[in-house]
Length: 239
View 1 (cartoon, rainbow, N blue to C red):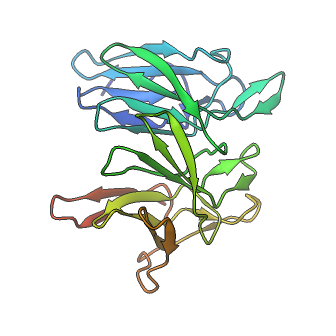
View 2 (cartoon, rainbow, N blue to C red; view 1 turned 180 degrees about the vertical axis):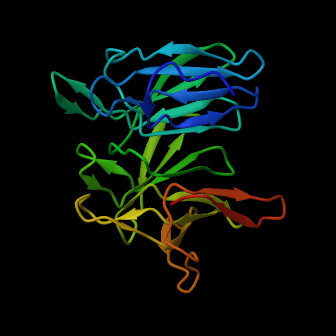
View 3 (cartoon, one colour; view 1 turned 180 degrees about the horizontal axis):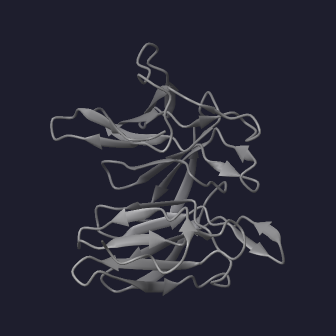
């Protein structure tokens, strides 16, 4: 048995860092009744949880993040925050970068469009690709795609997908391309359907293509894609 997390939460967006620690970004405590708003760190050697930082922009009792990713630099990018102020959903577009070595959080730029739970992957050149996602208090899905450049702190809007999706998973392919798989489809979250869809984004050409017959063996959401050194992609878990 391992140390219990010190609050009952969901939507933690955990990231296993190269230092061997697990960074759990924000999270939603008992749905919307006071999100934690902190960056929590699990240290396996001591079997303990601790608070890595207090979210600096909104009150730490009111915050959820919809996406996080560890970069090749070791830093963690986090965005898609949602807050509640006097019971009203706020969906800011700011992006923050957490440095686990310095234990500091830095504002690095604003998104063109708020997005929670997009398909997300770091490109080979170090930029971050995000497609789809949720907004409007989890009620509406996006068909947008965006690229973030950590060197400049700038998000750039890219070609739209041919469908609306959240909770899809993404991986890089040879030839400066991105594979998007599965997710939950439908523009309105009242109309949910788990997808077996795959689509490929060409980064240089800024265009999407559906590879046709290359669908997943089953409908999947919140699964994981693992790319081997040989370039093959394994699909793990999901539901």
